[in-house]
Image 1 (tube, rainbow, N blue to C red):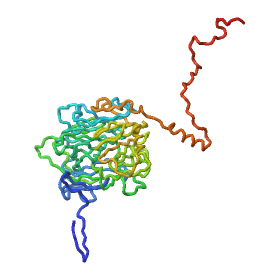
Image 2 (tube, helix red, strand yellow; image 1 turned 180 degrees about the vertical axis):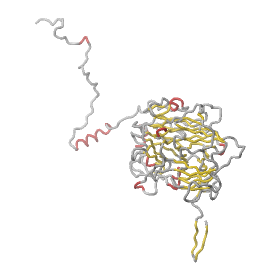
Image 3 (cartoon, helix red, strand yellow; image 1 turned 90 degrees about the vertical axis):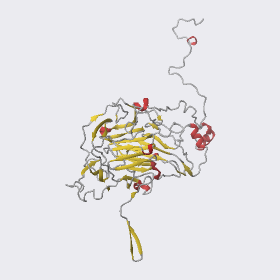
Image 4 (cartoon, one colour; image 1 turned 90 degrees about the horizontal axis):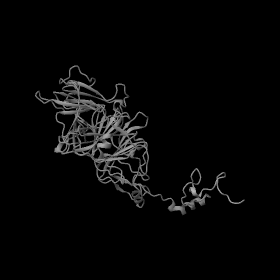
Amino acid sequence: MAWYTKGHHMGSTAATGLVTEPTAIDPYRYMHGFGNHHATEAIPGALPDSGTNIPLKHKYGLYSEHINGTSFISSRETVSNVWLYRERPGAPHRPLRPIHEPHDLEACFLPTNTNINFTPLTHTWGPLPQNTHPSATEPTTFIQGLKTIAGTGDATLREGLAVHQYAFNASMHNSAFSNHDGDLLLVPHTGTLDIKTEMGTLRLPPGHIAVLPSGIRFSVTLPYSCPLATGYALELFGTHFRLPDLGPLGANALAHPRDFVYPVASFDLSPPDAPQWEITLKLAGKLYKYTQPHTPFDVVAWHGNLAPYRYDLAKFHYLSPNKDQLDPTAYCVLTAPGKYPGVSVVDFCVFGEKWAVNEDTLRIPYYHRTMATEMCGVIRGEYKGSVRDLEGGGLSFEGSWMPHGETYDAVRGEMRKKHEAGKVGKGFLGFMFHISANVALTRWAMERHPDIRPERPGLWDNFKGHLLDHLDEVNASLSRLGRATMHPQPFTPPASPLGTIVPEEDAMPVPGDDVSVGDE
């Protein structure tokens, strides 16, 4: 910033755009703006002169590498790509080879896959413990601790998504991961993550989310000697997240674009005697790996709009109606457009502390059926619902068209309350994956998940209807309109379609039977 004076006036001029400075809890710098075309360099002059992306000879001897997140022929609105200027490109590495170790990842959710099952049954799971990896006695990294719960579509068709839980206790040292199946939305529950990517590093504590684009290499480590990290991941096939349209809401609602932050360029260099790096990639739900003698995190500068980003959920702007309830998508942070106009693949919705001012309205979830699948998780606080045994780090599943809502006792108790304006959801932060499709569950989730929580038997047995409790009022309303009134009758079993069945000994004689009929 430069200060200047001119006559009797004083002012200043910014030296750079807004870059978040390091803090005691986050040592990294970030740029602001969702979907912006960012430009950043760790060494001044590392970006080539304007007008060219592929200089014949780079000023510092760096290599140019281009990554496309959309096809070359894409609309200006949807095109996504980034130019990297690095010590070595991604191409030099040893041959790929498959990983044959067992894992619990799925990327195909078509009925032909015997490892998944479409079910209308409601499911709830607890948080993953530390020892879900087959080698439970060994440290578990992010890749090993990732478990697929559900999904729809197929990654090879670039359509659909997968939902995962994760639990791991070890950092990735001299190793990186590249997901070729889709973008990853990470939602931590416990444990702060350091996510080093080719574009720079993000610190991701619980209460924040991060999106890691497909094809970008990254490594996840645990700062502060964290003993265990748990959370959720949504994997999006073939499309990218964007902010929801605001329509008549105008400029100030939901998640503000400037609150999404991107890492600045930051690079490492490997000395000649450095250990080999192992790069794991995932394609069609299968794992492969290769080695290389240098770090993949050697990008000195980059510019583009295909990059990892982070968002603090505490900055979300909630809407508060004065009547009725808003649909859960009114709390949408990110959405992913689908192939049908106006229909998303998934909406990521968040629920936290907000003002409730709605009057004469049931404030707990109402009874509902929808074509969408709803999968919910808890980041912090206590889940107040009466139907599911859901807790922090756990996950619930409600399939398409299945009726759902709170218990009879919860609804009747809510009806007796006199609501006033006030804060609700204090200390709570939860989310929903609102998925516009039928979703299949994996066999691992249905059979081998370590904390499956079945629906309670008899949950709805005490449910009662109350129309006849108001029979006098009902008949008075009907009479005023000249309509027939209601008069409940004792229940009578319906007659058999063959007539009344009587015991054989009481049967009437039929003409022609050889019986005595007495004197004529």
